[in-house]
Length: 383
Ligand SMILES: *Cc1c(COP(=O)(O)O)cnc(C)c1O
Figure: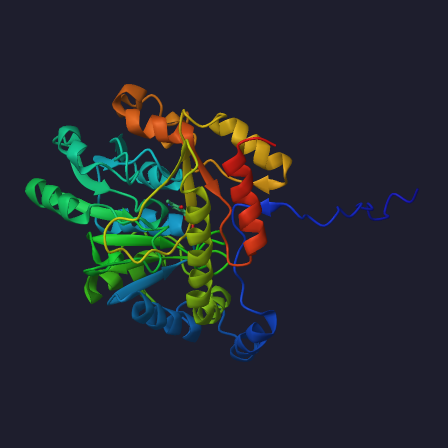
């Protein structure tokens, strides 16, 4: 055999498994004109025209005043902490994607885990005060699954103890409460536009800023700290969103309402079909929330005929790939579990939720028939 011959890869069968999510993508032909513009102008990054347009369009869509785009949500979190010069200890939730706490470690900050509320699975404000020490400088809550945190209670505690609040709003794209966008709360909020999120730019993210001055500082930080050709004001990083991602975001934004509407329909179908299933609990939305239906978490309680993991495997045997978001807890990963606040005794509600939760598939392309099939398997609780 000729050694230089390319290795022949046996092409896999088309993957007809149903995953927990599937990116919603605008039609390719609609994207071509954007690409042509980029090729014509040769502006690929560094606050090009699409980047500016997407910042404006997102401010309008989300109902916020100032927003800085990022290469991804994790760099947005890392930079948000830099922008507010957060040090020492930060109170956060163990029940999240690992990037929440990683953003603290990347800043040399010690995470202090506080337990969650059993109904919303968000940071429990009643347990925050007991975790505050002289080293505490901020709180980093997560609007888990897009359910708004108790923003008023968190603000009162932050005001009393002179703490900053940075929301990990990676799940909260477009979420509204009766007082407007959930993204207006806290000193800063960070969004993710990763492929798995409700609104995606392949990779991407943003920081919601309260004023133009803060946005300017953040814009400097995401571009190495450059202010102009010869002035560097901070040890910034490269966290800029490229023109190709920004252009795709502009196109995606045109289709996002339709995508969220389809998610809502799936959410309602699951709720209808699972309402009376013994041992299955669906999370409820708090108050007047306009939800984005980013996830469909269920809690598999002890009176369900099988364990959460058995249901997970049962769905897999039907080519349905549900996900245990969030299991394991962040506080159980090796770089966190030695912290005093990571002990399971300190986090009973989160520990319990992590053992019960299963996120069912939800994405715009999921058909009614597929939703019914998934809900049917969950309702039967056997193969
Ligand atoms: C997705 C996600 C992130 C990270 O965002 P990336 O854009 O993937 O870097 C952070 N926090 C939470 C809660 C997330 O779900």
